Image 1 (cartoon, one colour):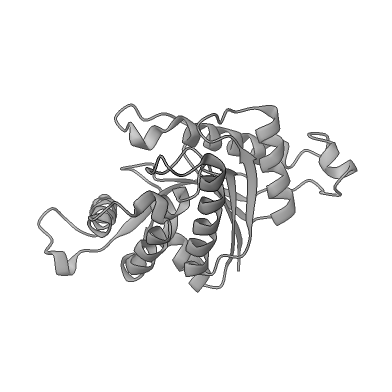
Image 2 (image 1 turned 30 degrees about the vertical axis):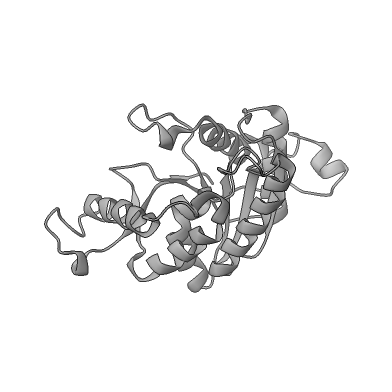
Length: 241
């Protein structure tokens, strides 16, 4: 069984992007942990909710969503939501999480902007993706990078064997069939009530996105009846040994 660490910018990013895959990986007996770079304090739609309160709420929501799948640990890095940059401190903090969790596989957001997808290229997402890639190589495996992690915290260097980039769009290397766990993905997303409570069409949105990826995988086509549709989540797979 594998140890898997998912690294993202915000609470709910994993559930929107890779929640079905997390459900499958946990069911297969893998250990899955999260590293979340911000508390999501800039999120939500209720202006009456203070930002400190929002951050606390989103941590609780993410824990509830993770419990839907049986995820073990969540490392909260606490960087400012909406102001995430590929800084030395962010690279160090992600490296700390990698050294602490010692994953066989890391799953990250895309480090590159897709100019055809405004929402898919949130600057916090691309920053988290790039910083995570920097942490995978060279930082986390280099005992001389961020020396305080070893000297002060006893965290020895760790090499991640493979890295998945989530949601690359058409042309993924790997598609995970999430048809039988789509209901759990939606349940986890509903746990993020401050972000999804207003979405009356949440299930339909997730089904259509999963259906689009299943078509890219070649498992369905445009005319597939709803009752026969399959759902997928795609990844680019990188050998980072």
